[in-house]
Length: 123
Image (cartoon, rainbow, N blue to C red):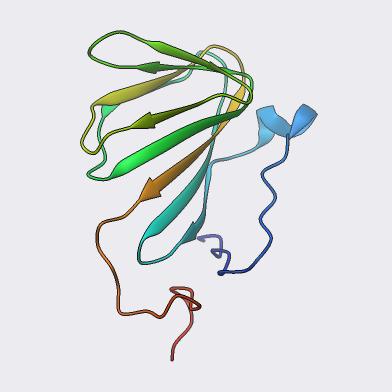
């Protein structure tokens, strides 16, 4: 069963998970016609293989340490640090410790929605 997305103007908590980090799961927080937020939780030593997204993406380490693997060499992110990836940039993630990462994807495709509607609301 999929978790419901937040709606525009909803307050979304991405604060530290602390002791519950290890038992938490990754979730898609919100998706609109132009934006998607993913709260990714990775246990230590778990790798996400090399992949790419078509759009620009911001990876913000919220907790722990994550290494972003890139063809030109890795970039290590500690809590509070972020990295902006250009569109179609191949990358992978390697959790050095239990970590949480907020991925913000700027979507090119614009749905037929007004700015104050979420994807789950009808006109």
